[in-house]
Each structure stands twice: as C-alpha cells, then as structure tokens.
Image (cartoon, rainbow, N blue to C red; front, side, top):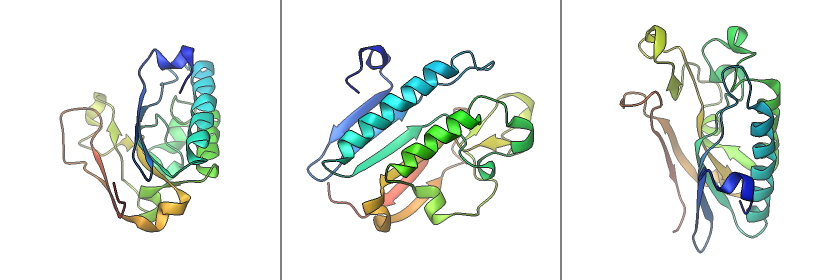
Length: 174
C-alpha cells in the first residue's frame, strides 16, 4: 500500500496483469474487546485509498479475509453479535465505502438472499457443525466487470481451518 505502518505486516499481495490487478488481502481484526478498532479503521482508510488509486488505471479483483460480516444475512446471529469485532457499525461502514468506490461483492451479486452461507466458524461450541458462522471472506471485483462473474462459491465442506475456501469464476483474460 506504500504505507510504512501497514506494509510491514504483509497483509496484502498485489499482482499486476495486463488488464487488471489481483489483490490478496487479510484485513486486521479489531480484537475481541475492540482494542484494535482504531488501528483497523486507519487500515481500512489506507486500503480504500490504495484500491481507488489502482482502479483509476484498470479493474481490480480482491480476494481474501476482509474481517467483516457486511450485512445481517452474513452471520448466523446478527442480533447477538452486533457489538463484536467484524460486525461493528464502523467496520461495516468502511466496507460499504469500499463497495461504493466501485466494487461488487461477487457472492451477494449472484446470491443476494442466500442465508446460512458462511466462511468462518468459531472453533468453540461446535459452531461449524451447527453452521453458526460468519461470512468474512470475499471476492470483490470492479463494477465494470460484474457482468463477467460466472460463479462465486463458498466451499464449506473443505475443512482444515476455522475458515473455508471461496471460489470465483469470471470471464477475464489474464
């Protein structure tokens, strides 16, 4: 991101192709008691500036752990979890700014009303077995490419982590 504070953490990798940028990202978590929320919000602003700058020259595809459940549909218990890291008003507002900067959430674009589609489950309380999860992992694409989205999947049967993989199929020349 060309930011000395954030770049040292290695939270993103950007690949430049002739027709687009591909960004892999792991957004900072605000912490169980929101002790890192201010840091997270500063990171969000820097990331938004970074993506906006890249988008000024060509489309972007962003994939990774965004550490936010954007809408109530994106977590199993939105009423109980409204105050937790990943679902605060501030984090959701910042993610909305990213979308408003000309990006499309590929999964919600194809599955706008699908409930129970999560990418992360707490290891405690058999959350995965009961599908009490959060959708924290996303593929975002520049709005100019949203018609190229063919598939956006959550591979919830793949285990090995508290997160599961996500898949994007898009009609894009590399």
